[in-house]
Length: 486
Image (tube, rainbow, N blue to C red; front, side):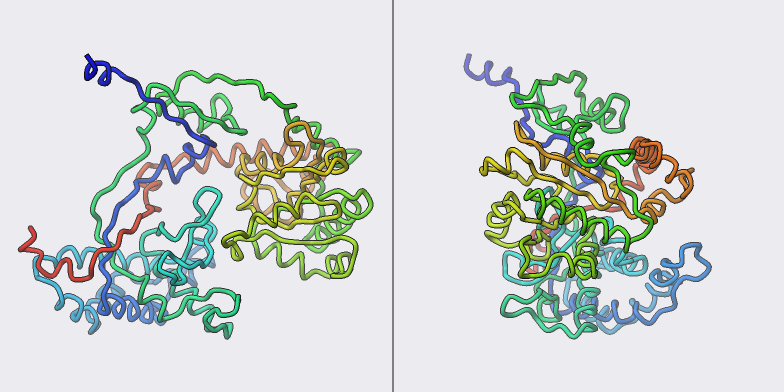
């Protein structure tokens, strides 16, 4: 019968860039669905809590000097003082007493988050920009896939990040954005974006694949046998892998590397410090874009690093505004409707240089139409050594696409590399030795793999401490008559 055939039908899951399913935020975290509790009383309590946090003593005796400046010394005392704030009593007075335990629990979570909040660490773990939400209010937008969204928050850290951004804007003398200026978070905007989060349920993607008879996906970064990602595939119930030959000429990473430089460097260029790196970058970019008349993409770890290069004397002297080489940038803080289309057309032009951040290593389709550019190919430079190898592979994938030519190089600040691998066996003499022997990349790649394996071996409870919450607005009076609705 028809009903019987339907019950026996099997479902297929089709995933683009399926390796993103294997990332910690998807596989390791619970997704919590919340309702917003938003009112003047909630805003007042959060504002007073932040003001109290700013004057409380910080932790001392920490081995990490940064922690001593950010973590509140006594979280219990912090909680006790919050409970005595006038705004605390005013908030509870608004709602029915049956709702008080729910509200008090969330206030406790809010205070604990404030006690441990570190804007620098949070920003590094959860890249973000300030964007307008659907209601037109500036707020925090987190990186999600290849884009940024205001629909995700990371617990109450996102609320405290808004206060931090507001304070930074005020300290820098910035006023609310107008006329195309930078977006800033203000007291007025936070009236529309701050809330207590009342949990309504949670879900996980950990067993997603088991609901399907077959998973079909594409990825340029197939996990290696024995890797953590491959183990997660087995946990999903994916036991068989089939690789299909690309219909186009396959990008050969070794050849792309080798075309970048001759001699022992082999596409991996190590400079002793940041100033030397900037000098080498300017020289290489100019030689490629101006002399060879090829397009160049230069990737930086952060927008701050990109700005430092643009302010350097080497950049300003090499790329004057009226010079033959044109320079553009693709950065998260300027993302908007129609932003990418023009930037991508520019990026593949002769004598064009595009500076990008790590957020854009994946998903940019560089369509080259100029026959001369196709012949010479795009040159891609990464200025940092990413601990996420897929990020490096994706950046390399912006060149030599399909049947096009192209080249790729790593131009690294040696001091930054040593900092990245601090606590390992790598030292300056060893790094220079590998550079001279032409084995720098292989050695760094091995250290990266070991560091990533070590970082991922941790209890599941610890993985779930960075819970992402999806917010759905609920009227602020929805808990006033909790008993009636129960």
